[in-house]
Length: 228
Image 1 (spheres, rainbow, N blue to C red):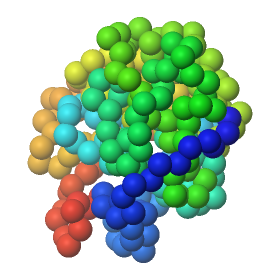
Image 2: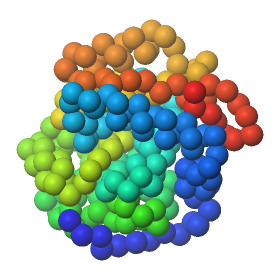
Image 3: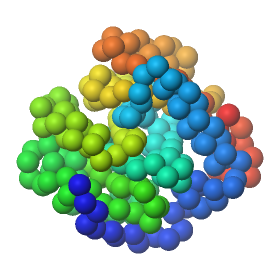
Image 4: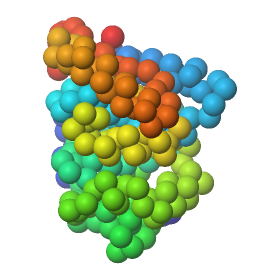
């Protein structure tokens, strides 16, 4: 898999705190999360991770993007996949085009080399969603999706998949069953306890390996949000 295209347009990258201010307290919390994931991998290798939440608006996409950055800053070869084939946001975060992406690879319309792009974070490659398909769940359960993830493992140390909320559609469950681990993002004072319980139950129902939860927005400080 090559790194053919680079279309970074917004040098501010205002939402990527780990890129803008790697010495901030928030960035340190992301590195702590990365360390905790590594500890969780003592007995089982974690190379592919699903980042999801119970409901929309809980910070899973920003969590996935910032975790991808701190892994890349550690020197690991990282691929961030926008596997939200319904409401993708990764291309906005990294200011990339979304003409070709995951959906193109799955339907055989593009090779990984043609769809995966680099960004200005060293070691970090991005696979955007691509054109939004009418049948996301069918694409994610396809043999081509499984084959792509299998091949990507050969080229990357860590692969992060940003997915739709668990309680909204089944996409996160599908990918959780395909990947080594799943992280559930919970927004403080926003996510209902019963929703968290339902999301965990849904993930367990497909034998997903839930390695932990991230409590987002737990304390306001000078930054936009704070991870505890």
